[in-house]
Image (cartoon, rainbow, N blue to C red; front, side):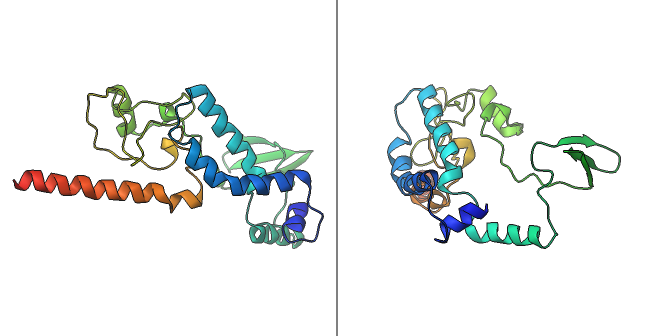
Length: 210
C-alpha cells in the first residue's frame, strides 16, 4: 500500500507492473467497446473477463486518498492488519473469533464489501429463478450472467418469445465487459437503454391509442 501510494504521487520509482496497469487502464474503454457483444465462444469470453478482472488490481486498486486514510488509521492504532492473512474464523455466541499467528480477536459484526461473482444460476431471486425455469433468459456461461442486446434488453433462450425486460449491471456480465466500471455506468450503455425504453413506451402508447 505504501509503495502504491508512493508511485502514484511520484515519490517512488514506478515499477513495471504499476506501469503496465496504468497502460491497461487507459486501454480499457477500447477493450470494453470492441469486445462486448462479440462472437467469441463462451469459454474465450470467460477468459477475457477473467484477465480483465485480474488486471484490475494493477490498473485500479483503491483510490490513493483512501489508502492514505487507511495507513493513517493503522499508524494511529485505530486499525490493524494483523488478521487479514487468511485467519481462522469460528462463529461463537458472542460473534466471530479470529485467530492468526497465535493472536486472537473477537469481533461482534462484519461487513462483506466484496461483490459476489455474477453467476446467474446461483442467484436466489424468485424472478431470476422463474425466468431461467421458463427459458426466458439464457446464461452466457456457467460463471457469468445472461445475454442482452445492445440496448440492455434480455435475449431469451427461445428467440420466438418476447421478453420486455431490460437488465444492466453485473448480471449482464458475459454479454458485456466492464459492468462495474464507473465510466460504463455513466456511458453509452444506460443512454442506449433509456432511448430504447422511451421508444418502446411511445410505441405502446401509439398502438393502444389507435
